[in-house]
Image (cartoon, rainbow, N blue to C red; front, side, top):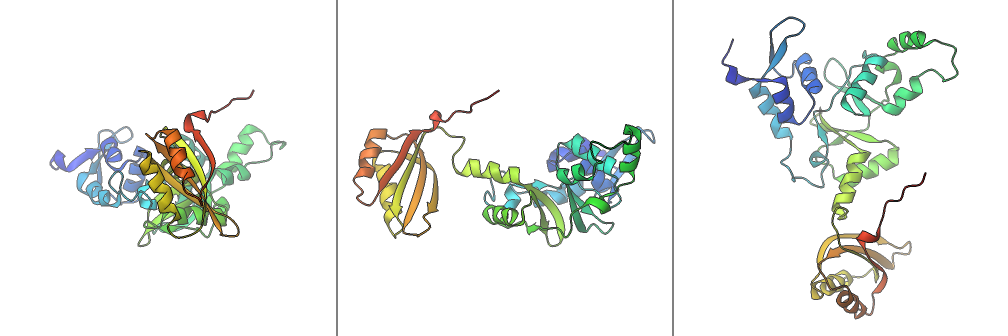
Amino acid sequence: MKDKKEWISTKEAAEKLGVTTARIRQLVAAEQVGAQKVGGKYRGQWLIKASDIEKRLPQLPKKGAYTMRVKGRMTPNPIVVSPRTSYNEALRTMKANGIKHLPVMNKKDQLVGIVTHSDMLEAEPSPVTTLSVYEMASLLEKVTMTHIMTRPVYAVEDDCTITNAAKFMLEKKIGCLPIMREGELVGIITDTDVMKTFVEITGGAQVGTSVEVKLPDKKGELAKLTKAFANANGYIASVAITYSESSDYAYVDIKEHGSDVEKLRSEIAQIESAEILEMRSCADDKLDIYQ
């Protein structure tokens, strides 16, 4: 056996790449990383070639980098299935890893389809079927990803912006996008990832005051508004701008903290072209439960 320093456990490899051990085993099966079996034939463990894992690390952005690019928000090295994977196996994979999207790769490691949890549900027999549980399980074992996967597959390059990815997902009415780099699948981004990004960039996790102001859609107006926040000693956490249908006005929603609220209100009031639509503490928003 070679020097053990050249080899790491499956768990260690998974932690380095930020993926599951199931994904590491897939990389081994696809011969994308070197590995050797130690121990018993059936209960033995895999040792993974550390250098092969290190080669895949450059694909992962540093924490906090590429915040508004899909490569900074994607799940890297996603778990995949083949066209011949059975329904039951795909379902087990989804449940075991807590995922709802499975890219489908052929023997040449090419992206040929994608299967979602919704696709899986549609493939199941009707609830009013007369088939027994055993008959349904046997039937679904014969159903492969070839029968239910969606194709062609919409995908984006890893330097695509989050906003464009969100736009593409809305236009095509899809819940995820595989992420490619020079023809190779390197990640996947879902609508949940996009929503998390939206919450983050709009300051959703921060306390403070939310201020919505109507401004003329003209050069220099936003500068006047931000100066008012500075004069009130306010720290701007996020800025979101939407526009009226006529494009004559812009609606600016700013989340800030640290200012004297009355001072801020006075400063904005001095801008003749500005109209305060709402000013309220973010703490006023509550999650209600109805039963």
